[in-house]
Image (cartoon, rainbow over all chains, first blue to last red; front, side):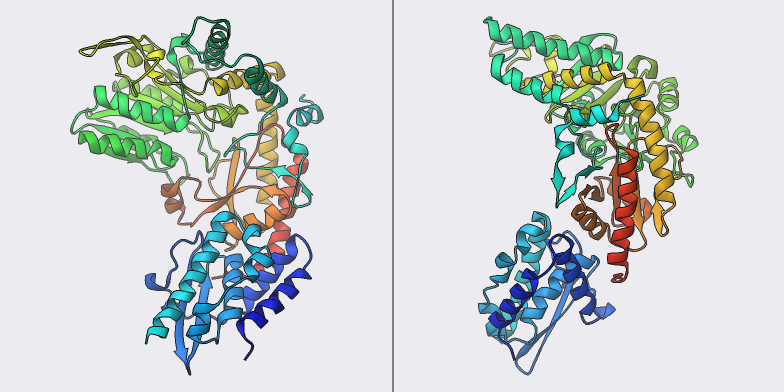
Length: 139
Length: 410
């Protein structure tokens, strides 16, 4: 199992090779497409992340000591952003997720690329992913 | 004919690039760009005149006051008000509506009274009325949209009754770009002694406005949507109403005399201009209106009509594009969605191509609820936009579709 920083470094490398302009968005949209389909019954008010301009749902479960996340969004680009977070944090231990320092956001310039409102959504999604891991860590 | 090349050079921002592409600015309903005479006026004012208006006897203050009052006169002439004291400077169109809601409400609205707005209003023309209704125990009635996606005038006849005190209606929908029959509504309202406020925020820059012909009781618009600086709004009100209405805010500049037991308010228009207003922006509004007058307003409006017809036809020809509103005549704005693509996704891709449009609910959530959509894309045009830019928008939409549709999200 690759650790969080190895995956981040891989993503930083991948994204640095993308074409300027549209490249980043094509990359995100592609990631959105690859995300595991989200079960409609999980689209509950409880799983809806507050603070995102577009609607994002996030559900999770703990299996064999590792977090498994499922997500969906009504916009492709936001879904891609969440998929990127999950690519790094899925299948990691709750402890590792809680301690994760996601430096890739700054290094890939993802934060400034997305509008401040959307970037706020990115941070809300990350916060929610960590919250869910924290709950399991306590158990 | 308008000399588009020359006009575009008057607006320096239009030559900039965004995300490596030439800017195509189609968010004019949110705010318009500023021509050089306006930019020059702002710099000139702060460089050589700046001083507070109506406060001092010194040279600069007199000069600033003169420019400020000339601005009021220019606005009066632009909308053909009877007298310049009927022109009140506010901070925005929203500020002007709030002034009327609060002050007219204070003087004339009682418990059990009714105010009518329409289903296609901007939030700025809903919330101030909700507030005054709550305060006074009055109620807000809503004139719905018909299947033809226009206002239902027969329904309006049913809605008006003895309790109706005011109708507040947008001249042009900020979402649909359609013109409402405000003259008919005003005439109907006046038969029943009901006042009418016309929200002209999206109209003043796209069609000739004559408040005396319209016979509206109030008319509001904002400067930044007609090529002036931000932070200046205009309230036109018939003198008889403004005289009877109490001041909105109170403080410096709106008084004749102040004693602890009694204050005498200044006469119109200063009664409604408490505190230091944005006089520099008011003076920039004069520069923008002068600029439009010099170019010839009628030429501008007829060019915009042709451009809008072209844009509507062009957008209609795109497969999968849903255009909101049925009218074939649009002023300024056209709203649409592409298949089931989220407006934000389409907006982000267009932005990458240098095309600036607005996405979201456009501060008109009740209208979004009517259409059962989360939001729309709105492309809004001005006389400095070109047919070529309409083509670029259409190409951009098709490009975005190729990128996004394969990923079509539920």
